[in-house]
Length: 301
Ligand SMILES: C[C@](O)(CO)[C@H](O)COP(=O)(O)OP(=O)(O)OC[C@H]1O[C@@H](n2ccc(N)nc2=O)[C@H](O)[C@@H]1O
Ligand SMILES: Nc1ncnc2c1ncn2[C@@H]1O[C@H](COP(=O)(O)OP(=O)(O)OP(=O)(O)O)[C@@H](O)[C@H]1O
Image (cartoon, rainbow, N blue to C red):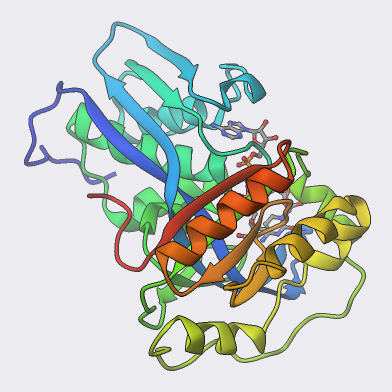
């Protein structure tokens, strides 16, 4: 790994935002011999997410707090600790850091919470440890942890292909708001891919930049999420979530993200999104509901 001192001295505590990943559309275009699927997806991020804090320590530790902390144990296979060990090994530095994860996103829910945490950990530890791997090397480390890590490391809208490692600039996205809804039931990504029966999609990726949220909704409506059918078969409540979002007066498009079960509604503005979120939460006290802007530039501020 190329290493050099970063502009910031090693040793200061660092905070990184781990934004929810949203697959605005997701087509499964093929399958590799090793079982991984080839994808074509327009990936963006929402202004809601987890928080990773890394600070100096004599050993490696993880503490988890936040409203969804209960869904996750700080076990050695937590992606945050796996990311720390992978970066330390690649950089040839000791894996020493006190890490805190504030878990706000539902776990195993199609919005890449684990992947976003892993990416935020890599970014935070690069600064804490004063190491500067080049972006290709960082993406390689990320991919070894999960297919969604490279796009979460990019942290801005991306056109994603391969199994998640082939990234290209996305068309410019217009300002828009999202309402994310999860029925608080985890869904396993491998189980959804395994349940998929349809033939492979062969539609061209989105070209051109939609002028506003309405144009974005129209462009997305011509595409879909190929994992919706198997996900709904495994977890029928996803159908209820989609119908409830679509039934909100100012919703422009309702769709599932990733392998589910989280679904999103696309809205033109904050007022419409927040009112829809309020109604959805009122009607379904057991669902996780969040209104947030579509992140159209970078997730790190
Ligand atoms: C469905 C998406 O959320 C779309 O962004 C991602 O592709 C999933 O990415 P992820 O959760 O990081 O996935 P990984 O942890 O790498 O893989 C979990 C499992 O999902 C399946 N998997 C994942 C990604 C992919 N392109 N093809 C697959 O078939 C494989 O069975 C794999 O063993
Ligand atoms: N920090 C973490 N946050 C969430 N899940 C984690 C974490 N570390 C390990 N995991 C495990 O990873 C699995 C997938 O969780 P995650 O929330 O990333 O799924 P997802 O949102 O479906 O991801 P994707 O959209 O990338 O498929 C869970 O079963 C969970 O036990």
